[in-house]
Image (cartoon, rainbow, N blue to C red; front, side, top):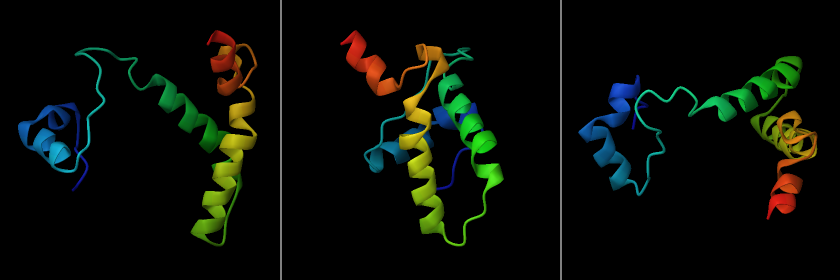
Length: 95
């Protein structure tokens, strides 16, 4: 299944039927909501700027392991939006 080109494609009947056929549920906000991808875009910006652009890995497996370590050992341990605590610590605090 090729990825859609834009928002109109994501809402198309054919695309929605393919998602259903694969047992997937789309995650989309309401029309005109420009904040629906903000947190994910911020994460990927941080990942690229702080880590990816500074490294070269000989194998995909090494890259995957390094990215996993970055996410769980660095990114998730601090988060300025949450007052400098990890998302896990924040969830425990508010639970």
